[in-house]
Length: 166
Image 1: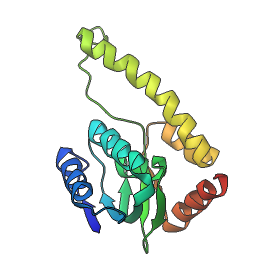
Image 2: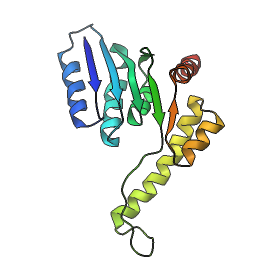
Image 3: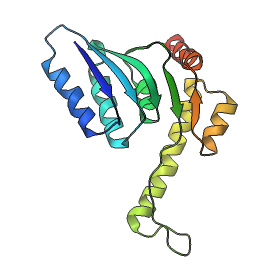
């Protein structure tokens, strides 16, 4: 079975993936073509969990754009993976809105909590990017808060680096 996950990473794509897996016949595989500009962190983590819990019957194919959450899903997933022709990528740190008061402090307890969680997740993403094989130039660009874009050739190198570690 083939499913095309195209668009923002959001709960609707989680539902689409879940439906495809629920319809999948026993002893059959699922090819997931992923093309996205990014999206919601919670949906990203749910999609990753679904893929990883079904990794033995899933092949993930990067198709077109793998930006932000799409980049993370593709490279963090533990299933079989490949890149379709001319797929490019983009990575950056997680973005979220935090309200700041006039003194420059987080406005609410939840905003304070989010700020601490973002700092914690930043460390985890730095480790993920290092393990993936990003160069110091690429990593420094991301650390500065920039979006870093990857050519198809560089995406292929990163995938080959990852496959070489298995």
